[in-house]
Amino acid sequence: MATKTPSTLGDVRTHIALLEQQANDMATRFDYITTRFEKILDRVEHLTLNTTTLIGQHDTQISALQQQVARSEEVFRAGQARVESAVHDSADEMSVAITQVEKSFSEYRVATDARLNSLEKVRWIVIGMGMAIGYAIANLGSIINFFK
Image (cartoon, rainbow, N blue to C red; front, side, top):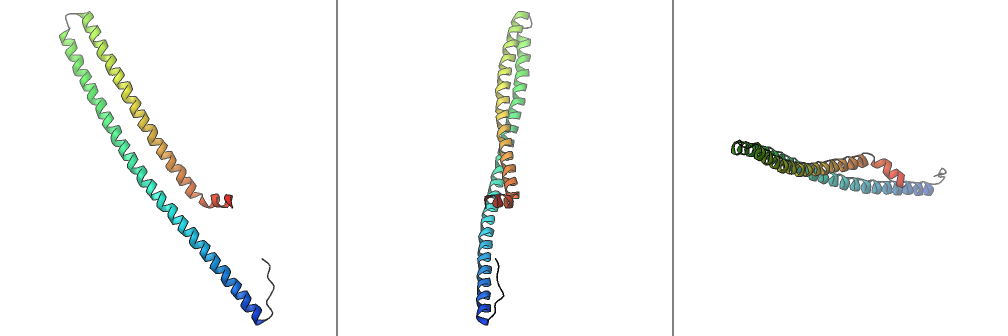
């Protein structure tokens, strides 16, 4: 903005009034940007809290599933011992029973692993979303400049 030097007192006052108006406009814009930034920070804090809660819940679920797998292994071992003692006189019967127990345990293990994998995927998706949001906030100035 090219301005020429004011030559009269009236021109000086006009120039001062224009500068004051520009300063007020800049202050208003700064207040708007500050308010928007505070809202964004509040949303990020809320998302962070929700993400932390979600990760805690998933960790609890994963821990519970791991304990369930451990209990299942104990049940399997106990069942295997009972089967072995009950059919020790017949090798064929014992082989069939052990195969059935191993098959059911294997199916249960596959199902449990699938549940664990899905929980892990959700966990990493949430972490990835948090990282993307953090990146966007960290580069907010660049993003704003891009859309100007």
